[in-house]
Length: 128
Image: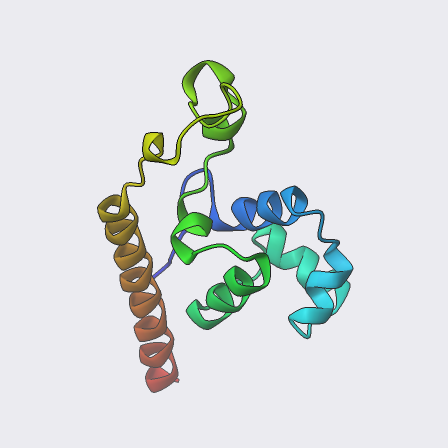
């Protein structure tokens, strides 16, 4: 069974975007994750699989919820015409709407995909 990377934006792109938005260097992330710089760069490019525990670790380092890593869409931040958060000083917090149910559904889907990937590895090891 093959597991394919999700369509855009991927969690890998989101990790990179949050890191850049927070002005954290790749080297700093690599050090904090106990990875080499090239290993961390591969993670951001999606060349290596990221585990749920690693996603949790990255979300803590970036100071964001896991759901934000899974669902970050920069067009929602940088599109001034469609975003109340950017439309001016004084926007009240009650204008911000979080779709936690949608995030929860996506997070559960990611967990289910990770479970299937791990099951495939176990099955492959049994066959070998």
